[in-house]
Image 1 (cartoon, one colour):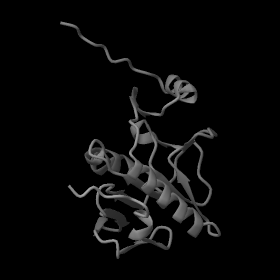
Image 2 (cartoon, one colour; image 1 turned 135 degrees about the vertical axis):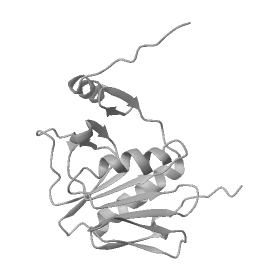
Image 3 (cartoon, one colour; image 1 turned 30 degrees about the vertical axis):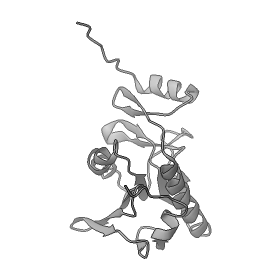
Length: 191
């Protein structure tokens, strides 16, 4: 019987490895977790949302950022790469690092079968520890379906959108995101 030993990495070791890595990995309080590659639909949806928000928000105080930038969640000692983030004002850098930010207002995650439960539960719980965070979109890639969570005084309110005719009012940034923009050029496999 062979046993494996999980290595615990310091944050500095992780950051040094990540700077040289060909692929990206998330940091989970000492554990380095490689990120799997995405699908064509995942890429199209992420690009669509990022580009649409970038255009709509260009002359405002809001800025959209794609998945290349790491979000550091201090309370949980996690470094993650959301698919899209929007910031109200200047993104706050973590200790002047240019590759880690702390203060998104809106976070978008595109779901896949392997990450859906994690994004709905663990990631969402961690994201809620961020004071500036007030809106969360979970986007299905194999059918037109989006879950929108918005922070309210009494907790988080869930709204669901399941038609290409819907538009999603993004309260945190003051714009509407049409489902047709999210799913532009996306091919659904109706099996």
